[in-house]
Length: 403
Image 1 (cartoon, rainbow, N blue to C red):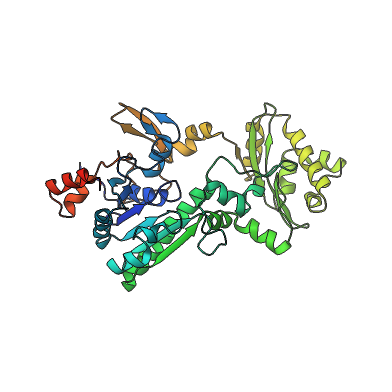
Image 2 (tube, rainbow, N blue to C red):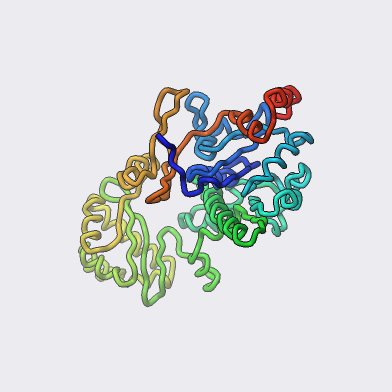
């Protein structure tokens, strides 16, 4: 059977990247058919190869972030290692790196050096704080992006300390924005013949993730209403919130300003709310006490029946409501599974299928192709042979610990 050519088939990428924000952009491109060569340290490899949950020698972290790429080991501290990298760059479309600021210049893979070798190269650089930040010289992780961007407040519970979450929202949002930025720069390079440097950061990406909620905070100079999203204006309020049912199972609803009264009538909550002077949702803008009183009463009312009952009423009225899933529930939800957002991949070394992320895209003619992550240096001979190295020269590079 002929292998499917993905939407990015023919695109050539070289990445000196590790962690998550630095690898996911290229993993997504590999899913879509691009050739991605991942540069790793000889004998050691990406330090995250054994991170996450291990099944045999396969780690969930590395596998999720590096599937479908090719592994080439290079000692970039050596002159020969840098020479090989520069040969790869001559025919590459994209180069990516997320080393600590200053390392690329030291090891001769900074933009100025690589753009002289290939003027059309799109050079993507991911950092923690951003290139112009006062802390831009510092390393950082997903926690930095969440902590500085304001994300922690968006998911906070009133009365509790702000904290970062377990989902790597800064890493993943940075990866997706880097993915899009790279393709934009690549399209421009195809039109103009000139590449450019693209810089993204964990902080900047997580800040962008806050969207209109951040704009509202900046315009009003007030913190957002947390715990539940009561938005709009005093005169035209809307709500997005989660409540537990009679069994303690959570569900979510979102009502725009035109749906509040309609929903309360359909749920038979209106009379109770009016009797306790809580029917006017706009009171939530007046004080924290009134907001809490409204939410507490809604929580009490929703706790008197099962969530499927409440969801059915709202959906029958063409209003928005759904179950709140745990991660494991989400992985088995038919809305996830039937769209191929989760899939299974065969791992020969384990002699079993494992569940993995599917693809968030559904292409009508060039579907994504989900593969596994490479073993360390798996593609050394293939890549170096394509560059013109003989078997003897490749053996010598191993002996000299260049690869």
